[in-house]
Amino acid sequence: MNSSISLIIFVTINLFVSCQIKEKDEKLNPQIVVNKNPLNDKIYIDSLLERSWKGDTVAYQLVIGFHLGSRMEQELLNLSVFMAHEYHYNYAFFCVYHILVRQKKTFEELNPQTKNLALYYLIRSYELGFKESLVRFKGHYGKEVPLPKSKYYLDKMAKFDLEYDNSQN
Image (tube, rainbow, N blue to C red; front, top):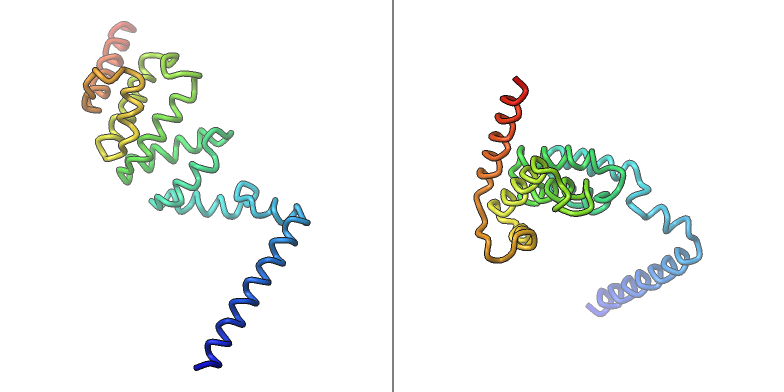
């Protein structure tokens, strides 16, 4: 029994010491640190994207976390729309809203049709359980305005499209 406790202590100490040495080496060699950045690992990012397209919500969250605000926003918008509709993923609905709003500096600057689309995704994410969406909605319209159903904004977009089509004839 004493020999197994001694072995466990020995292995633990060696593991701790080797981790300390590795940590010091990484501080001295910036190349090691750069290679650990997931943004620099194309294979890792590609595998996350592939897993996301297959419905892996954890991989999707990592991709969004790494790339939201980067030059990949169009690809993220495509992926987010897919994740939202294919898997009814509440966070993906919220990300679509967020990406649409980022097209301008503020929500108020969006054109009416894009604003309706963004609101549809925002409210749909809330309906599916993403609570932060309610906070965003109230931030745009105040605490007094009741939250409509997401279908309200789909209907507004359809009505707008119908009016536009009629004006073109």
